[in-house]
Picture (cartoon, rainbow, N blue to C red):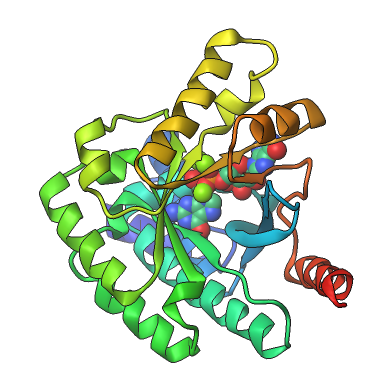
Amino acid sequence: NADSAMYKAKEQGRNNFQFFAPWMDTQVSNRLEMLISLRRALDQQEFKLFYQPKLSLKDGRIIGAEALIRWESPEQGMVAPDRFIPFAEEAGLIVPIGEWVLRTACRQNKAWQDAGLPPIPVAVNLSPRQMNQALPEFVANVLADSGLSASWLELEITENVVMKDAEKTVATLNTLKRLGLQISVDDFGTGYSSLSYLRRFPVDALKIDKSFVRDIARDADSAAIVKAVISLAHILNLRVIAEGVEDEEQHAFLRENGCDEVQGYYFGKPMTVDDFTDRLRKEAVQAAP
Ligand code: C2E
Ligand code: MG
Ligand code: MG
Ligand code: MG
């Protein structure tokens, strides 16, 4: 039965899980392996945060960072979030992983400030499963523990998070906003959100999805969508940021059309803490009179 199969697998030692109960097909067994390795990743601190700069389009200065999770798996090497976040969401592991992300990003941001670097908000991605009534208290605790002021924390949520159970989500977002943090809508344009909701949600910024930015120069529809989102954001008094900017042509288009901020490989890939610290330090030196 299942228990004895598990037991046998455990007997064979860590890192050598095998599931061979007859009722398990390969898919189930792979999922179990994934679940076990993600749990282990959390316990053994195999997750890392990388940081990608966000720049002002006015003067090209770094005005923020997004924390992006990586999994340094002993078996598979560096694993990108698209390969494990959806699974972690389904398995419920996204809640403890998300808590680790928030704590780590807040601590890191406080450490940069304590090191005398120019303060910037750091953004953390939230998955739909984290958006519940317990979230504001958790965030408040993490801020208190880290000593980071809420104004230096930004939360990125997708439109689908917002639209799922809209009433409850508005209440939760309002409570979060009262802490003093920033909220942005990620991958804007790819999900469903109605304009009336957008107006009612206490968000501060829209992030134009990188699929529209990628096609700006080649596809008139993408260019039109990007312009429309920039106008929409400004009408609603929101900041607008373009993600996935990879070349000068896209950069110029966004600047000419009044986008506020940019993020993308053209300005800096997601990087390790050490590399991001160097980048911030260089900026601080350049800014000095
Ligand atoms: P996202 O939040 O939309 O993050 C932006 C993604 O675009 C990142 O991929 C980033 O590396 C990538 N990117 C940035 N600039 C460029 C560019 O110029 N060109 C291209 N092609 N890509 C660019 P990444 O790091 O692989 O993350 C993928 C997604 O995984 C994120 O999309 C986010 O939805 C999710 N994710 C990442 N970290 C976390 C986390 O800590 N918690 C949760 N819940 N989700 C996360
Ligand atoms: Mg994001
Ligand atoms: Mg995005
Ligand atoms: Mg995304």
